[in-house]
Image (tube, rainbow, N blue to C red; front, top):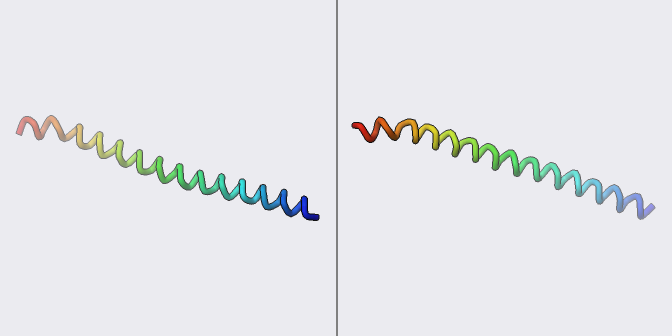
Length: 52
């Protein structure tokens, strides 16, 4: 009985960890995508700013 409970708890912790990691990585990916977009926009605006 105890072994089954330990296994279930261990699997539950693993699945919780995986969910936490995916949430964390999606947040990082979203932030990285926003940074890349801002960089592209900034580089796109750079030549016009230089000429003006």
